[in-house]
Structure formats: structure tokens, C-alpha cells
Image 1 (cartoon, rainbow, N blue to C red):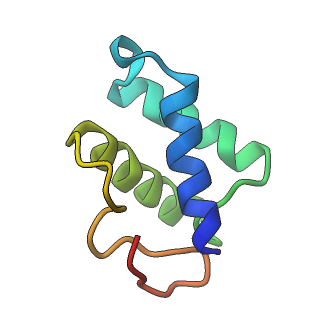
Image 2: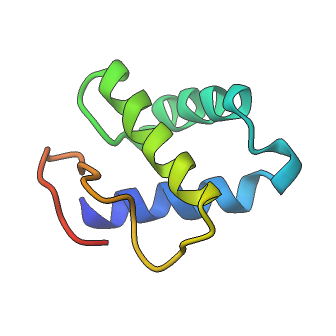
Length: 80
């Protein structure tokens, strides 16, 4: 499950140029990941919130680790 969150972050950065990394694009991205089975939570609402955590993390320029307190698909908190 740890890999899934990192995969989502990498996919977000690879699929959108910096000018496209907006809230609206993040919502579309969340829907794309959900449709393709790349899910960060069992419910769509929680999945969306976790995607937003990954998106916010990507905007901070701190690529060393995932957002503090980020939850993985199994609901556990882990270091990035």
C-alpha cells in the first residue's frame, strides 16, 4: 500500500505540467485514478481527500517525503 501513494504522487507530477496543477485538475486526476483502480481509500470521498494531500505535497517543493499524516489505502500512517 505504501507504494500506491508514491505511485499516485509520481503520476500526478508526470501527467500534469506545472500550469495544469490546479484544484480543478486535481479533481479530474482523482476521478481518473478512481476509475483506473488506483485508489488511496475504500470510499470515494476519502480517496479524494488523500489525493488532495498528495497534490498539496507536490506544491510545497518538498520532495523528500509524503505529506505528514498521509494515510495509505489500509488506513495506516507511515513515513514517506
